[in-house]
Image (cartoon, rainbow, N blue to C red; front, side, top):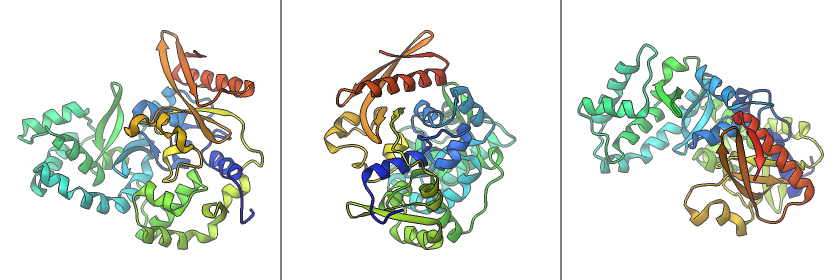
Length: 363
């Protein structure tokens, strides 16, 4: 790999890392490659796994959740992600102390003290022990019956705290979402890593599924520290390679550097809102031109629209309308698509339809 490269190389390697060049065999394989896949929007998170899985359907993602192979929790940044079940424990042990410390002021505002948190934990452990589960609304009712107020975001922060501390995670499907279970029972076979080993593993896995990326990208993704990033880098430096684009150093695994296709991908991808291809980095400008940012996040409201990606860059957004046996996709490209791009987009729309068990059509 040359010391200096261009954005075409950046896109080529990133799409290979994110299984957009060559799909993986299952949603679980995608979850393992990505380590954490943003999933605060449940349906979007399912498609994020599906678009990267060869021939996967939404039912395949649900099956992985039902089996406890993939769990949904807050491993970092206070944001819900799909995570391979066996990896969640060591991730939480690294990120939890900073997250909990950052919640202290909000807990005081909500009048949640240590006694409240401990009592809420004891109630939910007693209720869920033995493999039981509860939906969010049912859990709120349970706490209310025991005299713990859940109004004014208190209930959300109780669930979030118990997720951060490794008591709860989102497990089997429940209606259109998931139910809450005890992590220790739902995913008992957790990998055990020492602190130093975990620092190296976190960075290595991020770069395997998101590289090439900068250390600042990684720090943003994990909400970690530069000291932790540098410590992790020192531990795995012999497994990485780097190059510069416009004076910025990007890191990736040596395995990715050796295995990525040499040709720049030309397929047009239909990615969900909040997808890791855009949100997995602090600096999104390489893939999203600043002048189009407001069309992806209108009014900077924090809601990311689904993405059309062409030649490595975000080229537009899309929305869907399901009607009976079909799902119609209305594309909103930033500029007119070339004939080849239109044909590739139509292929991606059909793939999305198959994922949902519907006929996909361009509106």
